[in-house]
Image (cartoon, rainbow, N blue to C red; front, top):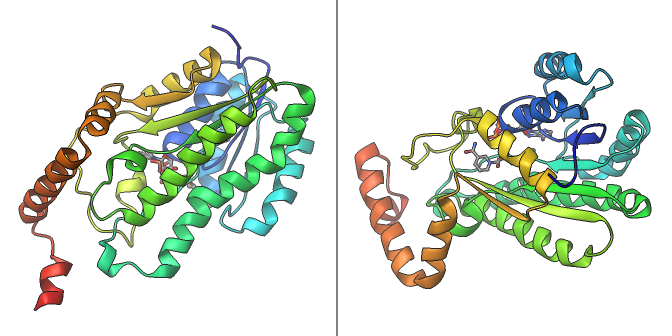
Length: 275
Ligand SMILES: NC(=O)c1ccc[n+]([C@@H]2O[C@H](COP(=O)([O-])OP(=O)(O)OC[C@H]3O[C@@H](n4cnc5c(N)ncnc54)[C@H](OP(=O)(O)O)[C@@H]3O)[C@@H](O)[C@H]2O)c1
């Protein structure tokens, strides 16, 4: 272990449920003071109570991270009330499972705002303090969707691809600063992301992983310093396969999607358009 999270202060966004709540609990259990946030106060209260058992100075804030103009003030408030931010975990995000023909531009903008622009804005706000201290960790929760072109998720995949690309360049820019960047590519994790309204059914058919297991892997990633985490790990092999044969991968994706759409009895917007 290179860098311990014990005694550090972490802001974990989107920590009222799912992966963010699991990461907050994991860091707190390891002795890290956590700042948690989201829109639902009651859920945050429950997570905070658990975190405070091992990290008593942990705090929570109710915030809508899609309101981008408020994020510098939010970052300043968190810095003030936590006494500094050593670790920023950009985890908050929303799904958008919608066939491209049914997508509105407003939906694409909304997804991009929350999944890409809000982590970027928080990062830019907190980065100078980390660089001045010569230490910090920025953890961006992206998705395997950024690389695999999942069907009916063009808006979501693009927002995560933007976050992944930003992370990679950022890591190079910060080399030697003491601030490191960490990219997380989860596969399918058992959270409410798959039951949120205003989304088509998921076309995935893999057994979901536990958020707690991902959170433990993220803590190791932060402490060991690795740039990119695929979870589960075999997803990395899929990325390698795709890179070696992108056309074959796309053909397989199209075939899989057609079979899955049929199996689930979903409408086909292309066929409906053709009449
Ligand atoms: N589950 C998966 O299989 C999977 C796979 C790959 C990547 N991911 C990524 O992992 C991250 C966490 O997702 P999850 O699976 O844990 O889903 P989740 O349970 O729905 O968690 C999403 C979190 O983001 C918060 N959030 C959503 N909109 C927000 C807003 N406008 N302002 C502030 N907070 C907001 C939610 O809290 P409130 O509703 O209380 O605001 C919640 O805490 C996301 O970035 C997601 O894209 C998930």
